[in-house]
Image 1 (cartoon, rainbow, N blue to C red):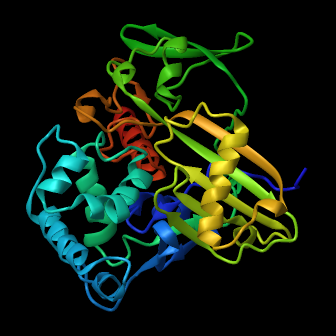
Image 2: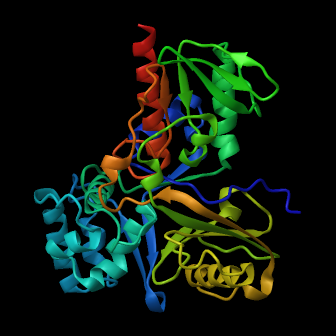
Image 3: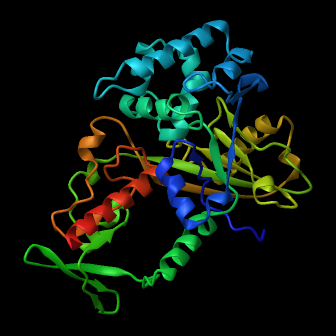
Length: 384
């Protein structure tokens, strides 16, 4: 209907995602990601705040933009400085929640609601009251404190099929890798404690030295892989809404909208160089609204888009697509690092990859790349 290839949801990179950036660079597609030096936050009442870098070294590089803004009160600014110092100096308790930890390092409820909380929800896909304090500290430190580029938001100017899938297939083909697409694995065959072969749909068997499985965890049992712990993982939803308008140019790049279920809004008209208006809105930690009918979700997404743009868009809305991912990312709550499995399995020549494995990163493209590297290192050890 639109002639546009769309992803289920907008994926982004942060400047601190070193492995993912290196991965895209090797594929030759990093140039398709536009990194912005400014993060725009739209608060209640339409008051906006722009976080941007300066010539100062980390962790002071964001201080000038924070000191200049009227979005935060003087008390909030002082509290934010205390939070930054607390992140550097104080490690959280093992099973503490992000909210409790942040409050213990002087983050007020107002500051949590208006700035810190929305950053965490976007990064962890989980509310601060439930999210792990350990992961919250890691994300905030890497994004805001450890480097001058960590906070920069990288938005792909193309769908994932063009950013990752296509370039990856070409990369492998050039290196004489044999690619078998749309080929279903039916069973893993074992012998003497090793994977002897895998059976494909149609009866064919493939025998190799080592194997890497990147299926989602809930699909492992179907082919006979037992991975202790994955069944204990909790999951959270993400909803992506694609809004298509007629004769409307939204006139903005992207924004984080405070106080709305759809927290992030992206102007895909600019990203995809479209003639007509297209906005994508993303709702993270969306379990509470995941079962709403499409019409209500479109209304909520449109509400966020109008706040980001600063004017009414409803009359120009001509088409909308909504994607619900009920198991988009795992929960970081509780003893998550004791549940996430390593790359190794009970079979010495079978390894797991996926953002849900034990990378010590939340479920992100960065975590997925790190898991792939871990599996590749393990395969090389088998071959040596």
